[in-house]
Length: 197
Image (cartoon, rainbow, N blue to C red; front, side, top):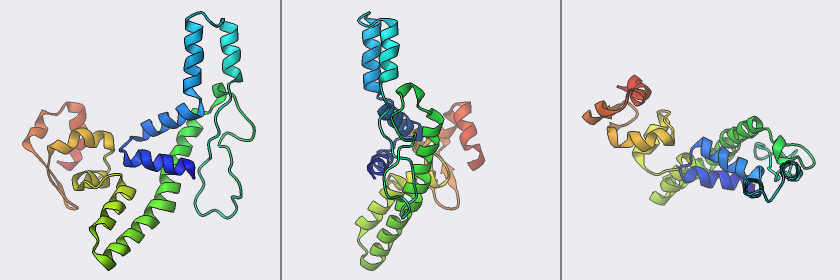
């Protein structure tokens, strides 16, 4: 559950998928300790053989693999990289990427965000308490900004939203209207939005 909370907080902070994976990889691969070893090696405080020996002895931190909630068959935590400790040098980065995607897609979205969002929507329907919609938006989208929510629904990521938001004149379920200043964007950025013009 700890990983779900961490990743959910990172989403609400507007972190991109690549940033979430990098943070998770840094934790699992014990980046701080690896950097300390590398620093000692560069300062010639460790020989090359001792550096690589120390690196191979450094074991990866435990990371819970993604699992849909509720899961009655899951009666204990399981390490994504199998039982026992593996060296940080043997971490499968691709597996970590896929598992992080599973956390976002299956665990957080299907198991948590959708049911919690529906509960807050029901609460709002009963009470007209605007705070319920705000919480729902933060859980589901990671923001309460209407333009950002619509851009997310149109398929843009937070990285694109950062530069694109200031060019939006109006946005709703029917269309995106861009400001005339949109013509100043680079060709690469224009390609990302041309289907909406």
